[in-house]
Structure formats: structure tokens, C-alpha cells
Amino acid sequence: MSLQRLQKVIAEAGIASRRKAEKMIEEGRVTVDGEIITKLGTKVDTFSNITVDGEPIERESLHTYLFYKPRGVVSTANDDKGRKTVVDYFSDLPYRLYPIGRLDYDTSGLLLMTNDGELANLMMHPRNKVAKVYVAKIEGQLTPEEIHRLSHGVRIDRHRSAPAKVKIIRSDKKKNSQIVQLTIHEGHYHQVKRMFKAVGHQVKKLSRERYSFLTLGNLVSGKYRELTHSEVDRLKQVD
Image 1 (cartoon, rainbow, N blue to C red):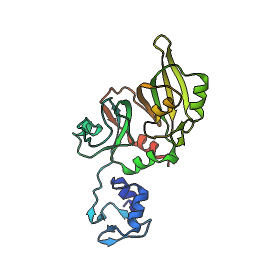
Image 2: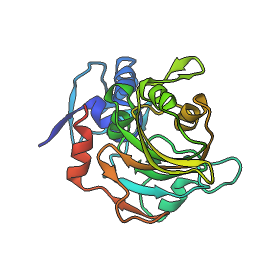
Image 3: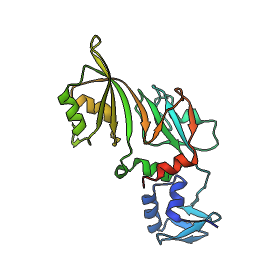
């Protein structure tokens, strides 16, 4: 019989992150087989009846998908403006998926969709510094000084971005534009666009090409594939 820590089971059910699950346990909001559990580290088995705030948790099978998000799609489950969401592409599946992080409405590229709360928490925690590679089409041409600034972090409002890797892919002097690859480990709001804006360049088109070791491969826009168990295990090795 396989035993797992209670907070991990709650996190994997998508109820909360592991840290928040620990707080729920300490606050006496979790029961196992009718008994209130407040001790962290308590282990439960597959057949345990677990409730959070009186509601039984459903331990559905865990799935994670690599999705090629098109432009013009929002990275949320619902949109008050009636726009298409990333969740709409998975409506035929029998389990609820949600995005790990977000891509802007007008940004395309690699987005992970999952019902694995533990994985989502690991990927989004700042300490794990998951590498994300973007390709941007910008107005103008980066100067050596601007590349240096991006590589060492630029001021964005009240914080300084972490150092980034910058690679010029192609320059078009006639159209005064440039294709630039930018590798970052953060995920702040409009991060890439704001970094380029900080050095005086507007992003005209943006795509995320890689997330950790994962790439889009042969996927086309709007399509997805499920990650293998070994790929998920490799992602979780960041912990």
C-alpha cells in the first residue's frame, strides 16, 4: 500500500499549493476518515476519505499537456469579455485543466496545462528559476550597451529584472526591426515586453519557444500533446 503525506495529496488534487495545504491542516480544516488532522507529515493511503472544509477531495488521475497557445487567446479558465480561453481547447477531456503561469493575449507559444497542483506550484515558485525562452520581433536594433543592460537586469517599475541571456537571431535594417531570443527565469506581468521597453524598444510579436527542457517540436498552433511520465518526473526534479 502506497502512503503519501497529507499535504501532498491535497496539493495533487488541485485544492491548494503544498504550503497552503499545510496551513489548512494546522488550522484544523482537514479530516481523514472522519478525524480532524492537525499534525503535519501525517501519511494517508489511496483509500483514505479526506475532506477539506467539509468537502471531500477527488483524487483524479494527474495529466499535464504541452500546448501551443495561439495569439488572441487568454490564459485563464474564464474571460468576462467572452474571449476564447486556453481551457476551451481541452473541453473534450474528462478532467479540469488549468495553465501553469500565463502567456499574454497577443503572445503565442509553449504553455503547460495541468491538473497536477504539486507540479504547478513547483514550476511557478521563484526559487526554482525555471528557464523560459522567448523569441521577440522588436522595433529598432539593440545596441551593445542595451544588450549589456538586458544581460545584467533592467529596472522595471520598482524592481530590477534578473539577468537574461540575449541572442540576436536576425536583423532587418531596411525595416528597422530585429528578431531576438531572450532567456529569463522570472514570470512577472508583461515581463519580456517591459524589459525591451526599458531599453527603448517595442515588441511587435512575441512567442515562447521553450519552457525548461521542453520545446514545441512539431506541434502547430492550437494543438497539444500529453507529457510522458518521464518528462513530468524530470520537471519535478527542480524541487
